[in-house]
Length: 313
Image 1 (tube, rainbow, N blue to C red):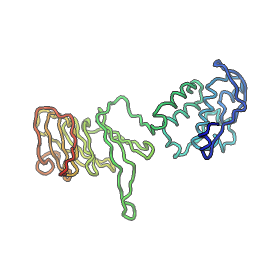
Image 2 (image 1 turned 45 degrees about the vertical axis):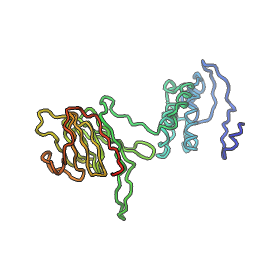
Image 3 (image 1 turned 90 degrees about the vertical axis):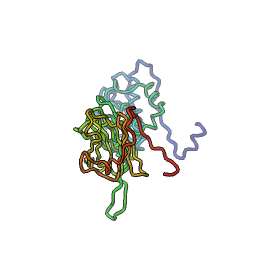
Image 4 (image 1 turned 120 degrees about the vertical axis):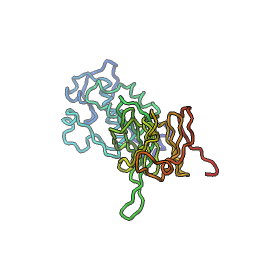
C-alpha cells in the first residue's frame, strides 16, 4: 500500500475476489454483486459474451457509490427486475450538483445498451481531461441561432418579511440571438437551474448592459429597451434616431455608474450619453432629460465601449 494512502482517515479498499483476466474478444460466465451486474448478464444468466462493456456498467455503479456513499438500489426489493426494466439509482438534488462531466460519464457507463457505453480507453480519456472535475454545468440552447451578445445579470436582492434584504438567486446570464429573442439562464451555486425565453421582440438585440434594476437592450433598428430584471417585463422603449432615413444598429451600451449615465454607441459612429435615473415616457423627444448629450457624430464606426476608472471618479 502506498504511504500517502495511510494519511487518509477513512480509506476504502475494493475487493476483487472473483476478478479474472479476459481476452479483448470477451468471455462467458456468471457472477457478481447484484446492482453492479450489467443487464445483459442478468437477462441471459451468463450466456451472453462478457466484454469490457459489462465492466463499464459496473464502473458506473461504482461511481454512483463514490458520489452518494450509498449502495446502488439500497432500498429496492427486486433489483434484477428493476435493472432489466431500465431503472437506475436515484440522485438527490444535492448529488446532481456535482460536476456535469462526472455525472454524464456515470450515466453513460450504466446505459442499458452495451453499445452506448464507453470503452475502457474512452473512460480514461474522459476522466483525464482537465474539465472533468472543474466544469460544473452546461446549458444547451438552440444551435440554429447565433449569439449576438451576452451579459451577466447580478443576483437579485429582495426584502423578506422583516424588511431585510436577502439574495433571491445567484444571478443569471441573458443571451441575445440572431432572431428577435432573448434567452435567460438562471444560475445556482453549482450550475444552471432555470431557463426563460422572451420571443417576439421588436428587433434583434445587438447590445446589452445592466442599469440599476433594469437591463438595457439596444437593437438592430437603433432603439433602446429597458427590461425589469425581476419579472422580465418591458419598462420603456426609446428611438435614438427617429428622423434618420436609415436606422443604425446599437453597437454597444456601457453604464457609467459613478455619473449616473449610460453611453450608447451606434454603428454609424454616433455616441449618446443618457441618464440612468430617467425613464422615458415616450419613444421619442427625450432630449435634455433622457438623452443628455451627443458626444460624437463621426462617420467612423464604433465597435466597443468601456469605462476607464480615473482617480477623480
